[in-house]
Each structure stands twice: as structure tokens, then as C-alpha cells.
Length: 137
Image (cartoon, rainbow, N blue to C red; front, side):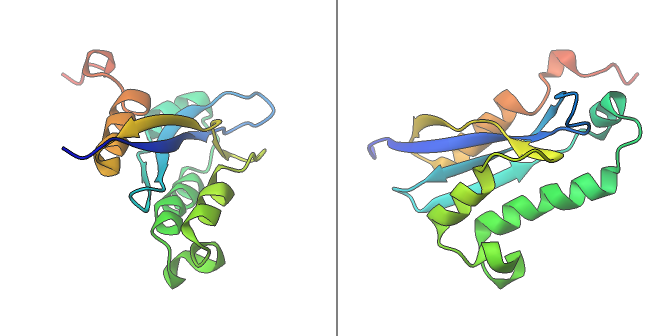
């Protein structure tokens, strides 16, 4: 059994009206130096977002969110930020901002598999528990 490795993560938030400070969680970014892992998952709950801010540009928000996993993966298709070293991309992604897309302060944890830890954090911090999903019947 491999020894657990430390990782850091931040929650991706959509703050449609920055002046109000209201937000919904829309993803997670996870960085694990030991495993050379920088990854993100995003899932935008459009209904929740529109309930919070009916006037929001959902497609614009989605486009910005979709850039985050590309930046984590790196490479030319991720633009200039995507060409930075992994640790620098992590710091750039979690830097404080006063825009519609923000991240929480970062937190730490231990894992054996960063991809599984990322999925677990999505379940815990972003996806609604099954019991809270609206009745669609």
C-alpha cells in the first residue's frame, strides 16, 4: 500500500454579483506535488445559478469554468498560463480575485490517489446530495 501524499485543493465558486458575495460551488482544483498532479473538475448547476442571478451570462460563465481544467492539464491549448510549470499554474488558479469566477482559500488533505480525492471532493463540496435534488416526477 502506498504511503498517503499531501495535497492542496480549492473550491471553484461562481459569484454572479460580486458586490453581494453570494456564490455557488462549481468545481474543485487539486494539486498534489508528490504525484505531479494538477487537476480540476467543474460542474455548473445552471438552475441554481439562475435562481441566484437570473440575468447572468451562463455561456460566459461556462466558458471561463471550462478553461480551468485546460489550464491544469497545461500545454499550448491552455494559453500562456497553461505553459507555466505546474506549481505556478496552481498558484495562478487559486490567486484571490474579485471576478465572477473565484476560488476558496486552499485547504490540505492526504490521499493515495489524487484523481479519486478530486472526485470525492466534487461529491462532498459541489454536487448536491441525492436527498436534496429536486423532485423531477
